[in-house]
Image (cartoon, rainbow, N blue to C red; front, top):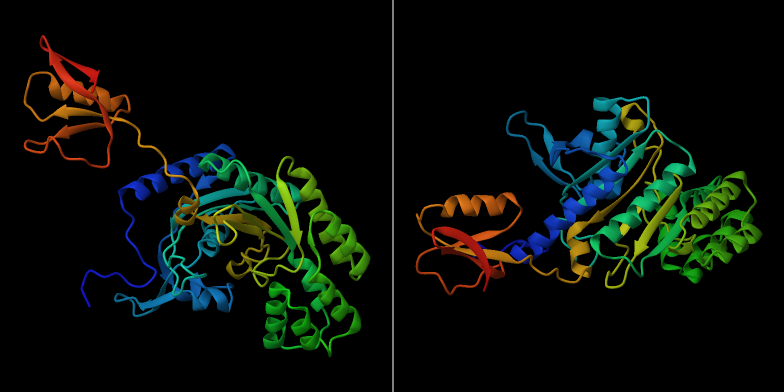
Length: 383
């Protein structure tokens, strides 16, 4: 095997795509800053026990492990940034007030999380700590939609809402071990009613009927009315349905759907959860929700809600951006040339100096103007 062949699902990012990703990164961070989110930059690797505290088996399996040559302790490359941000909120900032944080950096997965996905996503995310009300849930959803608009996806996004409390309530008191419940989760996600019927045959009647009903509870807002009719009328279910209804009403102008059997991230989320789907993406482009227990392992169990997306996946569903036109300049020691180039660059222009012998070469930058000398003055003119 050639030494330069990269591992499976790992790829270089070449100039055009890298330029697009970097422009998006700046736009999304600026959008989050406009909402009052502060940028944090957690490390790419940490001691394993800190990195995986409270995250569950799924993230453990996605995390690369290595031995620290200085301490001999096991370390991990982060597979998700949220646990690190929760640690920052709990231990480093330790504020009593609401804290809004955002981040953008690579994460590394041992396996791709779906076919054709990269094992090195560039994860952007935003999170609110310290407020348990629907106001925080709404803000996170609005910010996620504004981030997609900033990227150029202004039409066609569908926000799919669910709530982990509904299934959690149906599982309450069910005599089943974790493995059995995991199989039930999988059947719900696949909407496999026959498998679900077999798996729940020994469940209490109310739980069994409620879980079977979930398979059909997806669609527009009428789903919530049907859910209120067929699901057990527990306080937790009633609260979840009321919150979902309010969230749907607050997202004016957005396309909203509901899928009450969508359990992806079930062990992680404690309340509302959402995915945002767009044309061209194989799965949800954005995922988020409420995860109030995320900081408990760090000794500070604050309310938390947020979302994340992969910039590399986002670039894949966006049209290629046109290059900003550049200015071509000669490579010369002529009087005033360097000052003229510096002045143009200070104004934000891209000035490409053509090295001797390379006049006809084509590169990443489209030059529609050139810097030429007239009577001792350097001026820009169209090519």
